[in-house]
Length: 157
Image 1 (cartoon, rainbow, N blue to C red):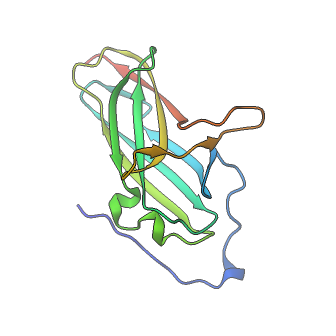
Image 2: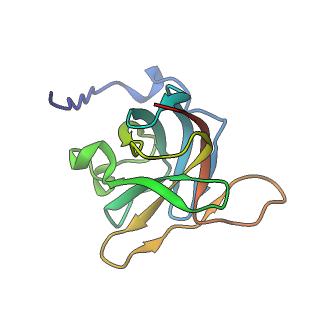
Image 3: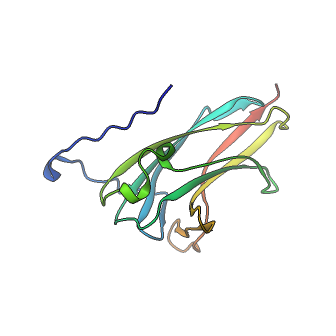
């Protein structure tokens, strides 16, 4: 199974308007426009499909890496995935303002994970320095270096 990257040249006046709703606006001009998790309920040992939709608002000077963490009620990371967007086939330095990048991740839920409710967080960092980008997540909320993207229920095996 191979990822396919599709690039289509379309006149700017024929493009749809970029999404106005955003889960987060990261320093450096990248916004997280949408996140979805399927299925929202899994048995321990199964995998989650996580789709992120990124919107670039200005040229990117670095190739950022995405992290997704599955956390328990005590905020301990119990599973994670780190990779460049689109598995590296379309790095952030190739993004142009206005690009909407659809990005899919697979996160394996540990087979020995206790049943319960877990939350997912995501963010961006520069691999060379491990420095995370700060993000604004809403009016009146302080900047954060990770964004909540969903709740997952883990069922017994």
